[in-house]
Image 1: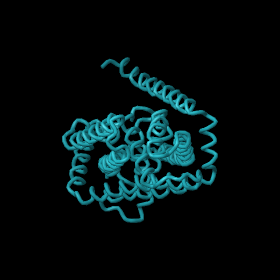
Image 2: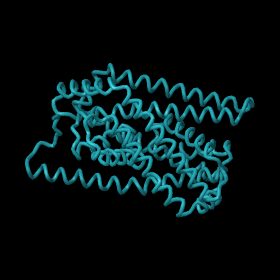
Image 3: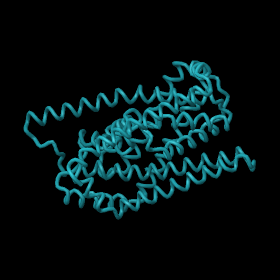
Length: 345
């Protein structure tokens, strides 16, 4: 590839992300407009600041669980470092939800955060990869729960067979993607080399160390299983937070119904992973799925907006703190003349 093509590729990628974000924002606006902006704002006011504050504070529970899942996969790390991985996971999710990045960008930022606070690059990146695997497997279980509850709710009505079929198809595609991701890790030496060349000093040594670290992690299936169960608990805890917020607003809806809504919205968001921050996709999913489980469309959209406000309230401060740590490291290393590349030891 010529130098001009290499320079043009990032510009095209940024343009594609910007275009996707604009289209997503237009879709979100159209969905909210279709159900009435005044109605959605009225539903949001019913939830109010109390529901917003509750949902924001409740998010500490899923983040602690996500940090725990990562901790389980990190060999030899003392319990005192659990807070580090919880913080790194918070930054990772904040980057995914707030910045117009792909999920891969969030994974890299989360691993970088762990490195800044003492993890070696090989440990940070290898455990991130396996943690993503555990989360994918847990998400399959969570999505499967949503599809099963949808089938039970709709029954055998032919008018909804297509919707159930779409859910099953999405579940199958997600499973195929998870299998492909695992196979890529076990056999994708070329991918490991590219990751090493990009993030680790000494491409060959980095690729070998990454491969050995991944093999060692997968040789401990009990740890992988435990991390998967913790991830599943985090998905359920997140849905429970949404249910509590709705109950505070006086919405009479069961926890199982909210679990189904959250699981199906999660599946739609995952299928549309190319959309930055799932703009528009999340709103359309809530508007479609919520009424099927007794949550009116305006309240479903209010819940979506509430969760976006929660993501900003958590994500922006987290990213600002992360950026401050990055800047401090750059200044420190430039003054000391150290190599900015992280060490492998």
